[in-house]
Length: 105
Image 1 (cartoon, rainbow, N blue to C red):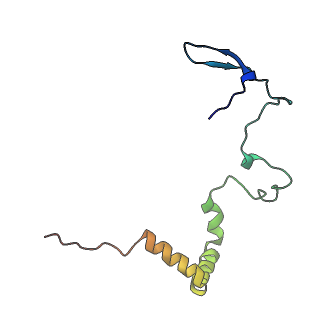
Image 2 (cartoon, rainbow, N blue to C red):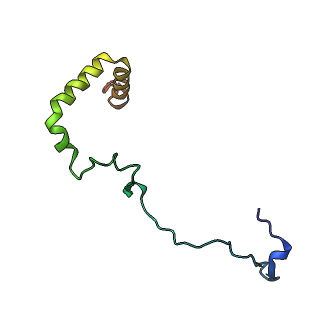
Image 3 (cartoon, helix red, strand yellow):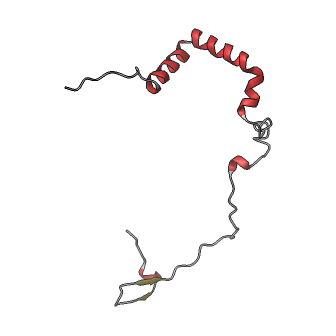
């Protein structure tokens, strides 16, 4: 519901029922709003976070250390019940129990 003070009404059209409201413009300096992406900004707060961001693909970075990453992943899966549960849940939800035969009479 919109409320309008009677002092704000400038004109009223009886035929269409339109009300012309005269309200003052908001006060304050008008500055143009610039649109941008926050992830594109680099400042003192996030410069260290983006120091190693490059345009290379993931495979080129992983390939030299692939055996180390694979060994650490296997180790943590075998020795961490939490990670093992996460992997089991993911596999059950994605893969399921496999295809089943269904006989229709």
